[in-house]
Structures are given as C-alpha cells and as structure tokens.
Image (cartoon, rainbow, N blue to C red; front, side, top):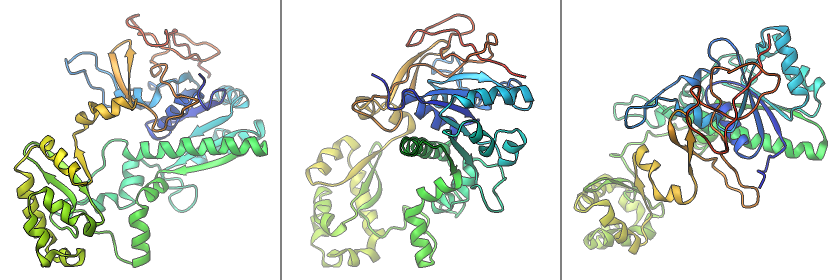
Length: 410
C-alpha cells in the first residue's frame, strides 16, 4: 500500500542531520526524495561522521547517515557551475518540493533562490532551513543545533550541572526535533497547494524549533520576568516528582497532583507515618520539607530492585517511568512491539536497526525500503535511481537492490 506522500517528488540539497532527517521522514511517508550532493569532497560530510564498528569489531559504518538518508535516491550536481545550475533547474521543474539550508545570499548567487525557482515551477514548495531565521542580524550566520537550538535557547543552562555550568546536548537532538517540524510544514504546504494550486516559501530555523521546545519555560519566564530555575535533584518543590535510585537502577516519578498522590505514595513505600503527619498534610506544607522528604523516600527505594518496585507502584496508582540507558531503550520490548525500530539488511554491515518515523498511519503505512545511497558513484547517469549494492557486491537489502547510478553535472 502506498504511503501518504506517494507521488510527491522532493529535491533535497542539504547536509548533516536536520533537513536530511526531515527528508527521511518524507521518504518514509512515500515521497520520492532525491538528494543532491557536490561531486567533490565526498558529498555530505555526514557520510563519514561518527563511524563505528559493530559490537564484534567489524563493519564500521556511519549509523546516523543511514538513519537520516534511508529510502532516498541521490545525484551529484556541481551547482557552482552554470551547467549544474541548469541541471538542478530541470529537476526543480518536475518537482513538488525543494528543501535546502544554503544561505540566502548563496542561493541568489547560484540562481536557485525562491524567487527564481518559483518562476520555473509556480507550484513548487520551497522550504529553507536556517540557523537563526530569515531576518535580523544573524540571518546569514551559519548554525548548528548545538548553537542555535540548544545554547541560544537556554536549554543548557536550564539543565545546568550542580556547579552552574551548562549541559551540552547529545548529537543531533535539535536537528531531529527540527526535522519533524520540517516534515509537518511541508505536508501542510502540500495540502494548501491542493486548495490554492500555488506553491509557497516555507521557513524553518533551528532557533525557532528550540524556542518551541522550551516554550513551557520561556513563556513563564517572559511573563514573570524570572528566569528558569536549573533542574537539580537535590532542590525540589514536590518530592513526588523526580528520580529515585533503586537497588539496581533508577525510576522517574511524575505525580504532579501531589495532594492526590501523597497518601498512596507513602503507603507504597511503607511510610504510613509520613502520610499521617500533619506537617505534610498539603502540598504547601510539604514544600519547605521537600528535600528532607525526598531523602527519606530515597532510603526506601534503595531497599528493592526496579522490577520489585513496579508492581507495588502500579498497585497504588503511582505514575512512574523507567530510567534507561540509550542502549537499553534500543532493546525495549515496548518499542519493538510498536514498530519504533526496524531491522534492515545492509550490504556492508549485515543488519542495522533504524528508528522509524515518529508517526504511524492506519491506511497509508510508512516503510523503510532501502538503505542510504552509497559513495562513490559507480558511474554517471542522467537519472538518479534508488537502491544500493556494496562496492564488492556483498549482501542484500529489502527490496532487492539496484546498482546506484547518480548523475554528475558540471
């Protein structure tokens, strides 16, 4: 069964993770996504970034490249030459969507700005991703998610370490958050085109996506004039919210309505004495003692393992969550039961687990059909084609691979 964007052609001209991640979602949804890469320098630098071997020490690949570029076709075009620009124009003429993160001044110089491409294809959806937005003093400033999404939005300081220094983000956290907004924005623009018959210029930025992620804090800070308080496990206002260490791991508690959950929480931990103590009878009364209460609860949690606590907490209706490592999450049976991971066959790595797009459709299911395009190009050809085959002819993928052929211009 075809995906929801079957029949839509997307031309992607970008590198690293934010736009390529958005392109991967569109490709999962059934769009034909053609990735444009420069013929010199090995293409998208993400191809070589963070290459790691398998657990047995063999078959080093770049898993994040595979995550963000599965299901795509690829083509090389030297857009710095006139012939390359003309080749891209020919692709754009028959495309539905063009996505790029190239700076606006460079787009004009290369004759691939929205103003020029919309004349070639008035129905074109042109999405531009920037670091900080299309206007203002930083409009032309290059950006990465660690700068625009994380640091600029105060996330690092809102999650500051006990010494006050900001926390650094994990790889591509801001990129992959932004990629979801990119996919949604393009889908909305395509729907609007069905009603108006016209394409449009769509703007996204890493900075804006970060503001949205932090909006629960930022709107409060803006209204109150008080900055967000860094998260610190030792300084709490509600002892029923936070992490507790067990004998063999951690549990996260989120029981926001503390008056409702106070008695069952105390009973679950065998501390009926605290439930009856008038000093702790209301959330307002408990707040000044929150640190001491948390210390008492921590003593109880250390007496049992995580799996021993779970049925006890469930019996008392307590809201809890597992605190897992990243590797632990990749093995979570809940994730696999829901299809949040998919195992694909890779010609160089054997098998590879990829995270599926974070939305599921009942009538137009999404699919991961092919791995990311390989490099270098086997030979130039006028039309890009999906499919991959290892350069030594090893392995297979599903569906059966074709030899990757991409076109070089200029």
